[in-house]
Length: 228
Image (cartoon, rainbow, N blue to C red):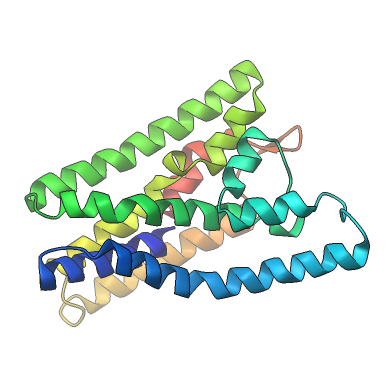
């Protein structure tokens, strides 16, 4: 999500700086050409598997292909309580596609603002995401609600902090405010190793305690934010 936020924001900021506007149609055509072929190939493979199997393969069926094709896998997991088999990871692709659908319009309104205002708005969005994710997870355990639990993990507004972190770094780079890589080589290298160590620790110790077969609260309150 951080990489996607960084990439898309960089493209949009550069286009706005060069032309003073954002060509929405060209943007969506580029995204379709970039993502479409790989997804079509994956879905065709899934369809072939179902045809050869003669029907649903465990928890994977034709609906999983439909939800993935429409980029709504995350909503299927939230509201349907569904498991999409081998296409379950497409929930994150759905979140990214939903981000692509709204972020160019947000950027067209955001970029004319002052740098201070932009930074405040994005930081506010990041904090709001943390609060929403924590609230959804707390509510899920309070009311024993699967949709609320699924929303904490799969809803775009509950996972937007990674996208917004990437967007913020992209804008800082676009403004030419990143530290000089030669002058600050040592502290930057040390920071890079520190980040690598944190990620390695998360991979080693896992996302938090497992409670009844479900991820514990640490992953929702802390680890997602830490990774971003």
